[in-house]
Length: 137
Image 1 (cartoon, rainbow, N blue to C red):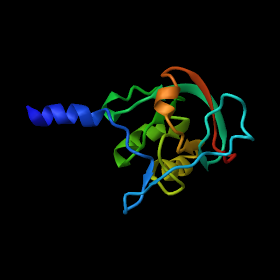
Image 2 (tube, rainbow, N blue to C red):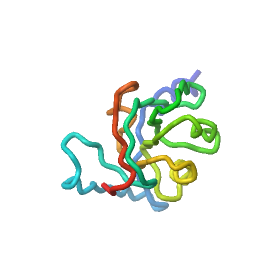
Image 3 (cartoon, one colour):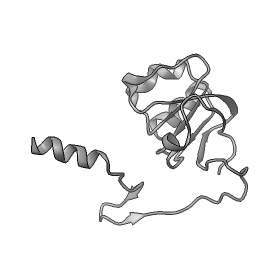
Image 4 (cartoon, helix red, strand yellow):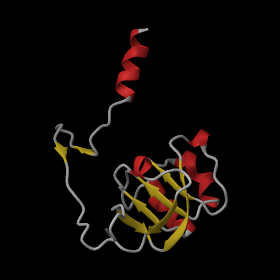
């Protein structure tokens, strides 16, 4: 019972985005001077601009994607690969140029932006969004 209680407590924690092997927490901010008001900043990793319905999905088993949706998630791993044939864009909270989602997005020709802080909380499931994978933010 104690482990279940601890799990519930730890599940509510949000780890820092970057932490070194020495335990140092590194933080920073994007230069948002060149993006439209209200836009979320991230790292453009696969070029193109696309508009569509956001599908905010936290677990692959909950994926209910329709052709042309834009996947918004915390991160992707190889288990997410089948979803890429149906989506037309990708937004993740973590990642870089060589992370799984970025590489697959380029292979499939999908606009993608990664490292969008709190994307799964700020973007609502079903919301219409524009993903700009061409311009670095």
